[in-house]
Image (cartoon, rainbow, N blue to C red; front, top):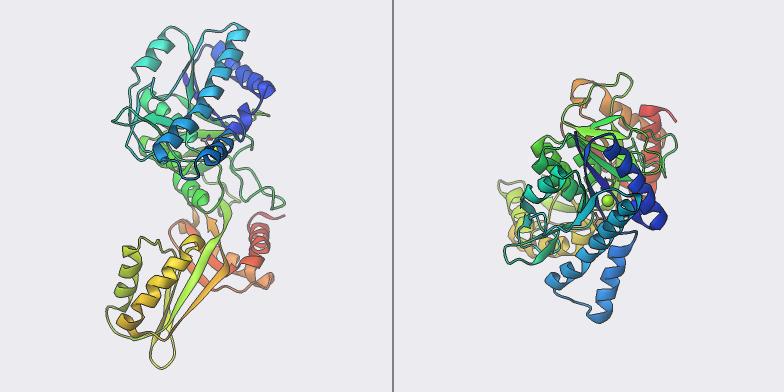
Length: 402
Ligand code: ASP
Ligand code: MG
């Protein structure tokens, strides 16, 4: 079988950890499998490189920054290969460019367009272990690009897809995907399986275990990913298209996103085209809107509220002020002390009473809900930010027990 293994920055942080990684690679290789291992930069290397760049030039070009940042992964790849050489195994380390990872030209956030699998296949045919520097590629100008923070996951999934790998294992410092952040929620449980869609929801809601784009790519190419711990090596969480229902589990996880702000536009005339004009203006300013709510306001007007990322709130406010005359609303109210708490579960569409359970947990904890939104696989509520951790624990207790 062909295994693609990926080791995150914490897994290759120092010599001892690299030796442990070499041990895992050796074990798989000695079972007779072909092994490709993708590595991230050691520990905080990428942050340190960014700091180094800023010391020289606070605003370096993205091209030069990518040349610099890609070296972190190269160091880790070479060191990992050296550890395997020491054990006496045939191994070769390769950069993104050497395995023909072609990307578009968006320095710092490049998207992979193709991989030429030839070089890797040749090396594997010679029974060599292939160590790949993650997070990097090359654009049509033959310049080095990087894939965005956390992008080594995407390298691993792309390589697994290109080579039709049998297994894609992502080794990291947590044991898998949990029902809630295990550092904050007592009794958070490790999931055996999770669907791509659930994983995407949980990732964008703040559980930063996998690079979002890697999950999108895995879904597109049907690559089953397993997230497991480098330390224990115990079975982790499998991310795939369809998972078997677990009887006692009505949802898969709970996530919190504190990076939200609510803007309420009050006293909007009750006429056709008002929502269109508001949201067109926001779209023109490239501001992403999440939850939207329209309700009756005073004297036959409507109130329209919506949420945006906190980083967009100043811009959104300005855009709204500029529409004031066009629309003729009364006033704006902005609240940044809010958080979004969501429950996610592919099975919720098939069971009733899930929303009521969530709302009951919030009621028991005396937490007021400002907004609610639902989709096929999630229910989100907007609440006061200072109550968000309590809300997550209360909801977790309701669904999973504590
Ligand atoms: N080293 C890069 C980062 O820190 C990529 C990665 O770790 O996946 O974001
Ligand atoms: Mg990562």
